[in-house]
Image (cartoon, rainbow, N blue to C red; front, side, top):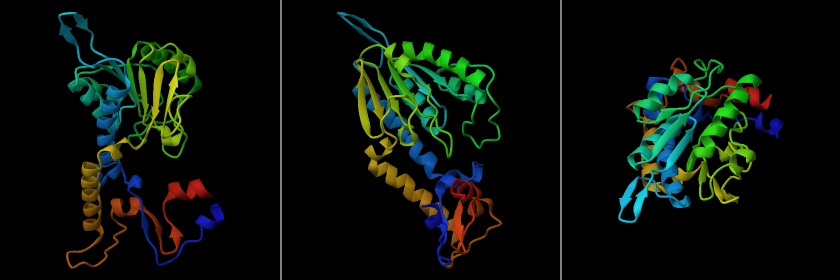
Length: 276
């Protein structure tokens, strides 16, 4: 299969939005981020349908109902939107990420940050997670297990580019969750963040629903298409002149960064590494 990939036609140029540099100029082209916003929003709505609990606190003549406890694992674009949505619905929310520098973002949305000391520096990873030491992984596991056991809803988004998604939630942790709880695993396409996740499938384990779905943005096709169309338009304006002529300026970091194939060669270093 790798040999077939290397046979590239010289008249074809291929660009991948997922290869965009994580810089300010790229934001209006970033299809990954625009779809992740919808993904985070829709994940909380899906969780509200799967859980046996209501999300906001309620006071009724028959007694009070406590707000749902929501845990967000992975504080990227989808994770932040999930926090904001869960807070708007009245939940108590906690967020976790190996990147300690996202703590301020989590707290600015009204959630609490779950801290684990000793994480590897991810400042140069372009906004993504990086692989961690075994010692840190053990501390992380213990802290997450404590938070998972208390949660009614878990939204899991943690992924590492080009690698299998990290397992953050073990079967043992799921066994400690209350019946009627729900996990929405948005990393299911790359293996999932739980040991029981199956992509495009809902698994019920001891009364806990584990929803593997990394394409929940598709449940809102109108807005998803609107945002993606705008991303494409912004990119075309970058490589096409006002006169309608193609202008591939490889001195531009955005053009160079997104180009995967050009002139019969694979130009993207990450793609080269994957197929070498």
